[in-house]
Image 1 (cartoon, one colour):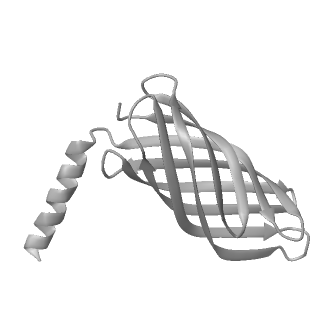
Image 2 (image 1 turned 90 degrees about the vertical axis):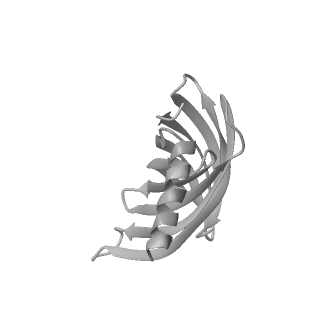
Image 3 (image 1 turned 180 degrees about the horizontal axis):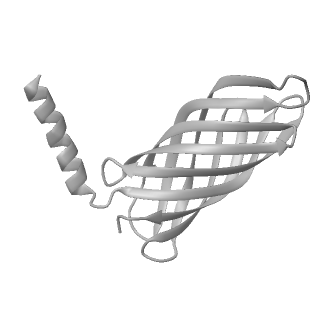
Amino acid sequence: MRRFALFLFSLAGVAWAETPGTVELKGSIGYTGFTDESLIHHLQTGASARIYVTRRLSVEPEFQYLRQSRRHSDVVIVPNVNWDFREGRVVPYVTGGAGWVRSEFRRFRPVFTVNEIFWQAGGGVKLYITDHWYVAPEARFGWELHFRAGAAVGYTFRR
């Protein structure tokens, strides 16, 4: 067991040494459309923290708030895994993850809520404005069947 623990700490040390300053903070806004009998439109807002495991591989716990109207909204928590294709001022990436969505419907009394599994995948590109600030247009799709298009503003501590 000690050898295994030493191995894990060594791996973590190598990953940390490869990526000094391993965190990015990001806020996003966009559109999410769920397909049902017709397209259901939502305003998407979110926040996340991307934590680099290697120079290109990262994990990103993300919180999203999706609002259709004052009568219907969704809260999403999804841990994503990301891969940056390169380093530099323009960084294309892919992302995907599975998590949880809680839908709340206020049309009925009492309020009706539904909890479901939620997954999404897609990609985008980080466009660095300065050494630390970037904007990132992105698109994703997933289940419960939806499409998401938006943009994020992020700050990286690693450059």
